[in-house]
Image (spheres, rainbow, N blue to C red):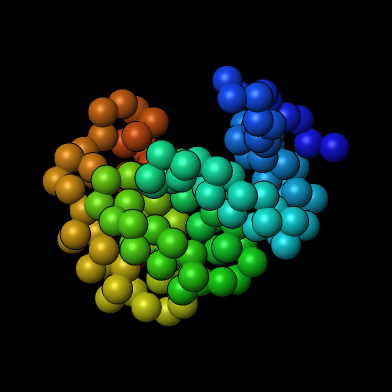
Length: 136
């Protein structure tokens, strides 16, 4: 079934990278319920140290957005403040609010983000930031 790792205590736990790959596989197949299950599991497993990584929450929110759970996707990001410091999370929250026909809220969350977040550090980031800002 699922790949397992043995920790130093001898307890088996699911491999988070394997969970992420399942999210990708189920997303590609359009099986959003299964993708959501594994994205939620990866975010929960990644939060063993207190908080899940921005990438895991982005993955979770992206699946929610694909399922049409717009406010839930935005809340997954904004409740953790990830829209302020994680560009992908900002993007998924903005797309969720725009799809929910709440452009004012999308603009408000851009204003809340850290100043350096929208400053591109490479050509790829310049392209991503421009796409993000053009969605408004």
